[in-house]
Image (cartoon, rainbow, N blue to C red; front, side, top):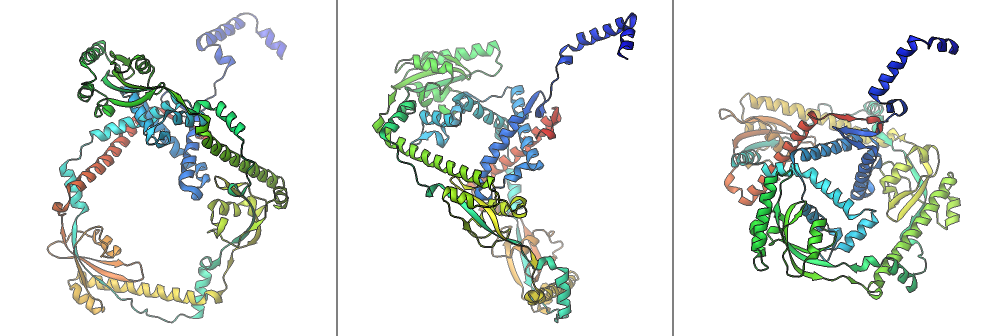
Length: 634
């Protein structure tokens, strides 16, 4: 067959085929024949791709955040559910849409806003002030540079830029405020009578009826499945620490980490910012420079604060006379840094072009770099080394426990002997938990999981805290079983009787309600049922002296018409019923609302309206942007 093909590939057919192949390679590119591109994004928003790595990083961040917030009640399996993954991805898509809108509309985050945000983070502060050494040290532990972290902060602030602008432009009028208050604080005059529980038509419950009910509701009368556990526990607080490090060890650590204890050279500065708009025209740039030159020419140490308060476009510092506090190299942008460190104490710079605009800088004071001696930081180094040794010891023992119990899945004995740990036990407990470690949701979940309960294996290492972990196995299993009829006989009889009484109470309430609606008075109808009538005037939606069931029902009834009350029969959720009458409806007494309350409510309504407007914006951006989602890569 191959020879036949060769024969046919001579003459004009070969020329035509060669021409087609040449055209295809020229038009589409030879790369298409020798290379293939596999898409790896989880979502594509316009031209921007959200990679699998970005998605997993966001999932991990949220997982760690919720784990820290919820503690033992945290359920890691929730992050494996498709609906959770979709929710997280939707949030990332919304953020990208907002970032793209920022780019299109020239919205940007000033460097000063990033600096202010970082300086306000408590973890980076020392004695209430931003500390650059602490900042760099903590970032190093997270394997991040200041530039990387600042980019993260800028991106986070950027996603809030448009929502914040929408909030700032949202107006809640006095009329809207009054309308809400009038509805929220509406007053209603009520009359009501709680009816006594009637006797059922048949108060005799037979054994046969009890037996039938027992069979029909067997699931309600089960002893739950229970287990008791054996477990090995590693607690960092109970482990014997290694010998304390010597001064020689501490000195070696000090020398290798000396940079941590150096206070860098700092400058105390104030500035005046003349903003240059994003995508500014040459005319706008010239106008901004002219304004900055004029301010710089007028500025002196005596009037600098006044000029900053009057002319600076940096809203964060103008109220403080342009004061930026003590700064060190690397905290601001390169242009600002260079100009700041070129000044002598007391000097005021000419306008300096930075990413934010033109800065006029006044160097008020200087502080030379200083290094703390070994003696000054010895105790700190010792505490860090001791803590580190404890962590290493715990991680070592916990790791050995995990390995040993995995290699010997049918018993805890080998691990107990190898590590010198005592095998502990729990009492029987159900899926609702028990005492001690049996109250921990992670332990409960593992104990009743297939691997431990059905397969009879040791569990994986279960972390109860930052330095506390266990490995469990089932010691005893008691399957779920129905309680004997004799044990629940009396309880079932009472349940049947209560149901009959509740049915009789509802029937009674419906009959009496029909009489009210035909024109009889509440007093007369209530008296016929041996109930007394109570009244409450000016009842609002939140009023503790009126039963909640009555209050909720009262605000669902229509307004009284033609002077006639509106009636309802209300289930009190305790087996009894009440008759309710709404006699009068009035608007709110706005004179009792203080200015402070109005201002607080206005802020809340502004945020609520702004949130709705932001969602509408995102919806519009979604409709106008091509979005592709690869669910199989989530």
